[in-house]
Image 1 (cartoon, each protein chain N blue to C red):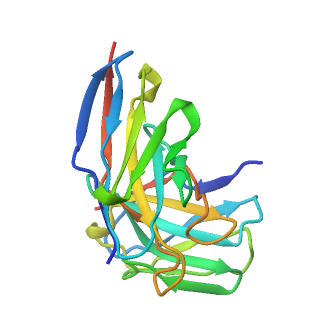
Image 2 (image 1 turned 60 degrees about the vertical axis):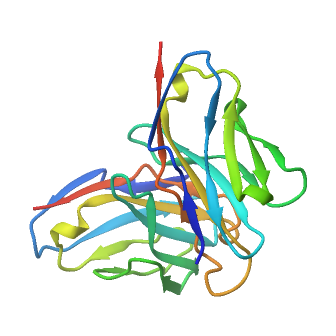
Length: 113
Length: 116
């Protein structure tokens, strides 16, 4: 099993550009999550999904969108990139809800200039 | 609202020395507590978790943590640190049920440096 994979690993965007961060898991997990990690701030939940077709906002959803058309994939969309979205983004998955172990991808480091 | 405090931003220990990383949580309900480790340039990996029962839990890589309800703490320990333990460590808390059912709240992390 590859676990949770994320692409790309690194990306530089200009202000106002858009992009999609890809996330795929091969563990047949129901729950998937997107976090952002800023230095010294821990991880903040952006969006989560409890299954295909069902998504909901986390703590910091503004400026982002998600979709979950399959169990395996949970892409994160940035429509109009802003410098405040410079961060490291982690996708995670778990079989059950938040009390279950979450498995994290390697992250995407995004810089918006 | 639930919160997690890791008082130490950065800790340096010598290889072979013992280690204790502190975690305090603020929560009204029975907490579910986790410790995750993040090696440089990688995602987070679960070290151990506590839901109920024995308050001393064992994890991977020789780590253990003790839940103390009276002190609202869940400190992580290791008797002898190895150079490969150098990483950032995150404490996290959640609970079962309710509106925040799916939210795992992380502390800000403690960076561990291991000197040879």
